Amino acid sequence: GSMASSRLQTVPSLVALSNIGHKHIAYSFHHSNKNEFKKLDGSNACFIGKMSADNAERMRNMAVANWEAINYLRDQNAKIVLTYCDNHLFNTKSKIISSLYRELFKISDYIIYPSNILRSLSRDLTPPNVKTFIIKDPWQVRQKLPYQPREPGKPWRIIWFGANKNLKFLLDLLPQFLNSRLLTESYELTVLGSTFAAKETSKIISEIRKGKNVLKNWSFRLVIWDMLDQPNQLEAELKRAQISIIPSDPNDPSKKGASHNRVVDSIRSGCLAIA
Image (tube, rainbow, N blue to C red):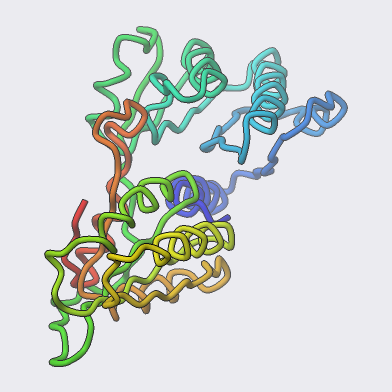
């Protein structure tokens, strides 16, 4: 899939299983049809990747369906392996997802984290019989590159890339970028994301441009993420940039201890990473 958690955690796990001779089946449950669960009969383990949905209704349906499927497997003595890459236990913006993960913690046999910080944050809610492991996310950029200086007379090339859930942090930052009187040179901002990200960014840019005091020294590239061309596309876009911006919210509990994969890929590409 397009999510980093899928590319960096779930898919490598499935590949590793195949390499050591284990069979696996991948399912994404977004409905509560119990008849589908019967296809899982005979499983020895249940590996739970990151779960997300576009809105509250889909999140609720996904949570119910997956909870029932996981418990169906647990009743058959399958081991429950949970990957935990965002601090969802303390997600104050979605009671559905925080409640789901609090229940998953109670029934998991193993929990895998991308960082020690994330494990520490969840320690008080981790049952003593659960075994925990840290498997750091691998980088996607294959070759480590030096910083690429800006060519004289050319704009500073800035890039943002990420999932839809992180787009709001960029959109909140854009008005400050475009209205800042401290910026006296020219800049090009590339947004590498989904079709949704491109549409939402375009809307914000159009609204900001209507202001009288907006500086005119910004240009934009809205590039659609191609999941079939990774990591080639990501490498190419990062290579052409000088600066990578990764805005977030330090006051958002769900972002504490989150994976560092975007920062690492930015630095490996030679970008100045601003997070």
